[in-house]
Length: 325
Ligand SMILES: Nc1nc2c(c(=O)[nH]1)N[C@H]1C(S)=C(S)[C@@H](COP(=O)(O)O)O[C@H]1N2
Ligand SMILES: [Mo]
Image 1 (cartoon, rainbow, N blue to C red):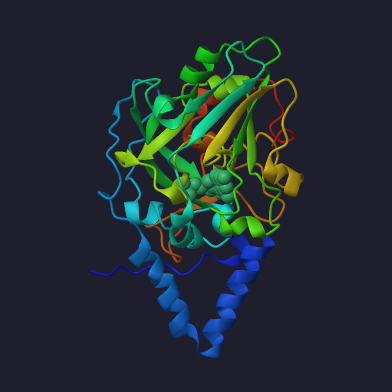
Image 2 (image 1 turned 180 degrees about the vertical axis):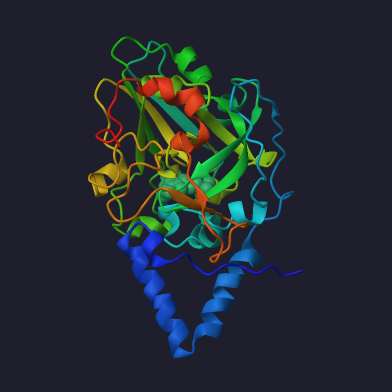
């Protein structure tokens, strides 16, 4: 049975110019009568989307962490694996599913270094076994105005952090992701400074909801979702959740994230989901749930800290969240 796939979201909801221009191209195509071909390639997204069962199983036990399971309908696997942001494979939502097959998630290792007593290099399969896997059903809210609900599999990043013993200078944690042109065709574009880098304050990184993530929907992560290991920080805009991590560095100074570097007035270091702080080019008060709300549906309200205020609000006590956006 074929499902109706939505055309790209309106240009006004899209972050970078390149994407906006692709939308305009798409509209021009529609107008020029080449719409058939354009629609066929958009529909190709679905044909390429992986169905569960192709990747190795990775079950996770029920999590005892407060807020770990939102009681909302989970996004269909086909949507969560074919509507992605992973600029290393292109800026279109359908690029990662079509192009990320060139990523090689094994062998893989993650270097852990910086202000810690026990630096080291972890083979991905050793990292997988460091702590028991848990399933966490989190909302993911993209800064572009859409959201999903995804059952991730992993363990709290805090488990790894405790093992490497940060010293008193470890104020921030930086995540450095893979930069390899032979695996990532999108690196030829200068849309961001590569590698994609993100960071958290140490207390944010230690928060039990911050998930070192190896799987989703009970299986290993598909490449387009950040295989073989990524971070998921559910109360922050999606871009804080770096994919395909190769290095975790403990540092004293606040690191510069790739998106902050690209547009500091638009993407702050904190990037907590906050319906009260508008993006300079659009409101953040509402969102569209991918796969459920079509283009004509009334968008749903975005929640403070993406709905995780009870769990994380105290991390920001006394901070002006309009300045520290
Ligand atoms: N390395 C890397 N990580 C990344 C990105 C990226 O382009 N490169 N995009 C981010 C953005 S903007 C979002 S919304 C989420 C999307 O994750 P998903 O495709 O698994 O839903 O990944 C984030 N992590
Ligand atoms: Mo995003």
